[in-house]
Image 1 (tube, rainbow, N blue to C red):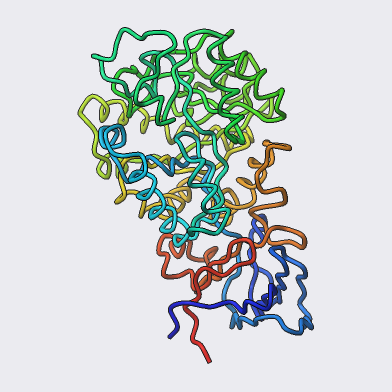
Image 2 (image 1 turned 90 degrees about the horizontal axis):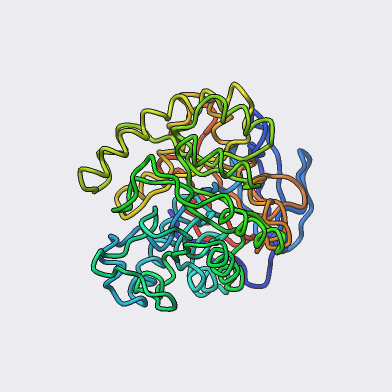
Length: 429
């Protein structure tokens, strides 16, 4: 049994023969099919044999070929370290930890992540240049927050804030504090200058931050508007962390295009999001999530409150047809990161397995297109169709019949990103 696969350096073509395809949209697999990958894209899909001289051939033997998974709410730099460690460790060491986690993320079958907060630009560059293995990253850069807001990890002894001086948190690029429209505009433009594909603000309180009550609304409408204008001027969009109706409604009123989380929204908010075509990027948090994370008791209480809204939010998402993306929002826990695929299976409480898989592939791929010309990877992701980028998984079994297959990375016998094979455990001749 081979544990690695050295793709022929002289060939940029791979031919998958005799596979059944989940295309990222349909509710069933295809009949036995052949798929040709050339120069990082899917060049041909055919039930008939494909003549591809010089291509490396992978015999699928009826296994499932599907798009690489996409996590729409990830924090690549904030998993292996606690907040305290992240602020106190050498930045280089923290990046090395994140690089190791990035490889593990790819090996879990997640070929793309939408990173919604953290100093991820160097990591993304190293992955894109092929220096290290990891997923494609759609970076937001630093979380933009207000003083005391979600994302403000400063110590109380660092107050009062002195205009013009940066704290350790801001120097590292973990989060930036902005307390006026002008400051928001500047911080948003800085992240865009650094390479952000979308801009992330925290419009309300959260679970993990030490000084942000869950019910708090943070940015004013004028401050949110400044961020939306800055992002729009660059042809991209603002996404906001928001749980409560007040935070959500204020964001919707100024042109925010994506709501992260939203667990405590009301039914009127759900209807408004559907009517306006606003995206909901949310997570299937349940009681097991509380058991897996290390948080102080006040944060645990907030998490329990968030969990109470999970069932309602997915019910409304289905009822009103809200554009809904799948993400995990795993923070400060390498153990929880290993459950990334398992969290996808939790969606079957509200969706069929095919619908859940489509959310983490084709639907998430649509969300990524909101970046417009700021898209760092132009092309279609999350689908198996001709012309799409070749991020593919070959699965031992049928994940529509048994979605639990995606929870165990051992079932991904081939992992491909951008036409390059990073894993192949099929027998070698």
